[in-house]
Image (cartoon, rainbow, N blue to C red; front, side, top):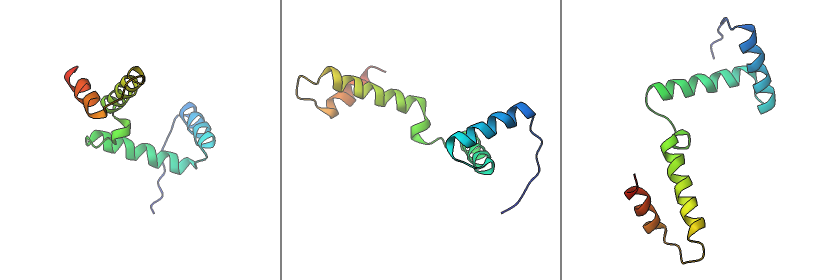
Length: 86
């Protein structure tokens, strides 16, 4: 594994270290994960769980399930309804 030296503004480093500590990460692990996410995003390879439209669709399905709880809920029909509304 390569070691690199980078310059980071003090206030960013302070926030970075606080976030790493809160999440139980090392500074290197947090920087590595951040770099990976940025590179995936720029390549258009964003994981489904991080895509706003996917999260919106999941929330729509949950909302429909709550609204239809009194009835027999058909997930296929709910998906069709969600697609039709967009």
